[in-house]
Image 1 (tube, rainbow, N blue to C red):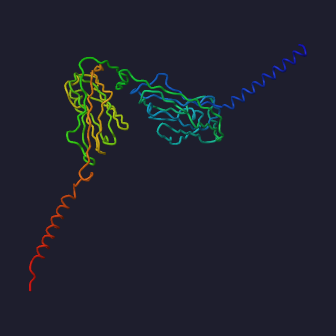
Image 2 (image 1 turned 60 degrees about the vertical axis):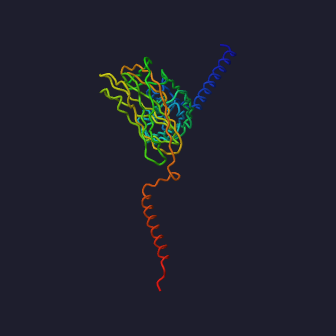
Length: 369
């Protein structure tokens, strides 16, 4: 090998070594990656809850972590969160602080205790979050304030990678029956039933007693399940209770109702009959009874949305909705009601009037000499 060739080989070796050192230093500077792992199948409105993993990649001797995750609460609702298996996988004792929750965000912190053994190295799940899809759209899943540290509490370099989740509408306006672990997609056919709101005949008054509103179905055939959303004005009425009406179970079959989904000024109520016989009820009857408290003078619409009826075989029944409204009036004398003290004050007034009349009569009598 010539001297020139040896020089070229030497400089090539030095250059490769320098490039390798730069690559190693760059990787060390970038550190680990904390990312969000979303489900492969997109969730649907009204569907099953889904899980999201917060994952760390390429970490060395991990002793603690902290992150804040933000999301769109109009698209997904956080239901549960738990520590993942990675932090404790080397045998160290793990302690997690109580998570800090606010609307659309979660702060999660876990640490390990003790001097030995070393923390885990590699990749794994730091935390698992469970969300309920509540609205169609896309929610960013944004990681903020990501901190990694080794067991002596030295901060480890880390970068964050966000993600997003898209919640789709289910077929037929977003409705999905989730009773037996599967989605039943219904198809409209036949004559339409009517689902309507029946408001009280006498108008409630501010500060008065709670009143009931019925959601009624008319002219239905072989009803097996129903769902509706009712919206109202919270400045006028406040929803206190919601319970299943007698009609769906009147055919003799067992009925299961999902926990009502409540939001500001709205309620979603879903009930279905379990498999078996006989057929579902036909005709008219009360599906649900809602109890409201009058809180402000005015008129509140009682608006039905996403009304769905289905037969016991999960075939969708055609239905139309009829809304209503309720007017809350002011009580007499600017909202004050004489309930307890009215009779007492009236009695005192009569006695006072009698005393004044007696005094006047005595003064009219001639004086005795």
